[in-house]
Length: 218
Image (cartoon, rainbow, N blue to C red; front, side, top):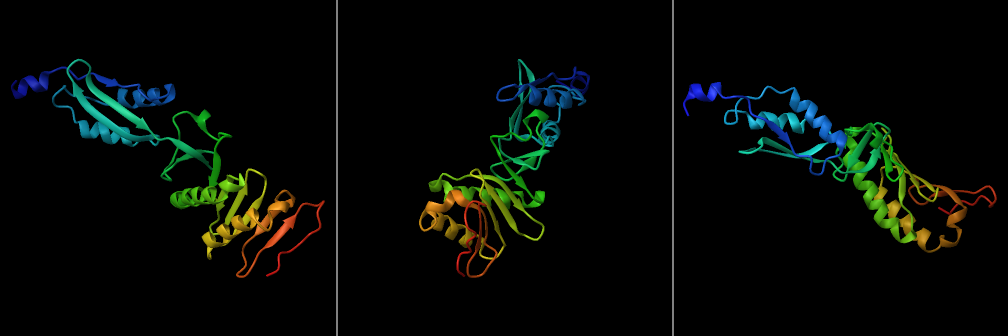
């Protein structure tokens, strides 16, 4: 086929695979592809189409290929959310923050909520996963975790307990608390409202109003 024949060939059809996509994700991808000016089957710039597809926030991976029957085939793999990030975004297991194709996917109750600077999302995600591993034997899971601009962590567990810890020896302090809650403090876990770990040699506990206020010795 000569150069002129290639230039005169009709635009290629773009076929979007709906495998693994929700209706909102499929429609989002279709809208973007409908806006693209595509040349012929042989001359279309597949890399340009790939770049456009991966620019969609919810797309994790994409494959674009030529198929004799269907034309140019676009197959997208969506990011899999594992937590809320604030109220307007989701985050996947790698700490990648994104806006979903369907806004109804936001603030899902089954997800924990992460808050902080978006650039810190991978760090917050890693911290949540680590804390969940340490506290799983206590049947406790993180419900909300916040990293403040001053690098202070605020964690709320699904049993209502709140923990605040600074950025100095953070991991060791959280691990030590999990061990204490499983041993010396196991009988009083239900009476505890919050724990402040921002001390070098100890911590303080805020008890339920029905229990006497007690500070752990430093």
